[in-house]
Image 1: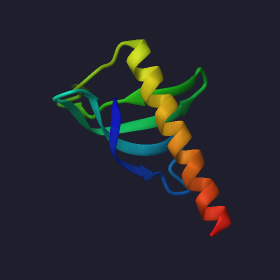
Image 2: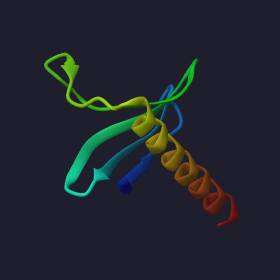
Image 3: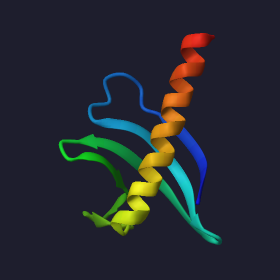
Length: 83
């Protein structure tokens, strides 16, 4: 699993922490994902199509993605504070 692109959400984005694209497994890529801070912790959501989910993830996959993005966001914050 690897992150293809990451955009940290700007201030005022509500519960959204970041938007990203990821390669879930070799040859399987998901675009337009977002990491959200919910009352029950970090959640990963895919884009919607016609009011429904374009992609969903098993909890294990969503948790892995959330952990990776959380580390990347923290790393970006550290670099911005140091720079």
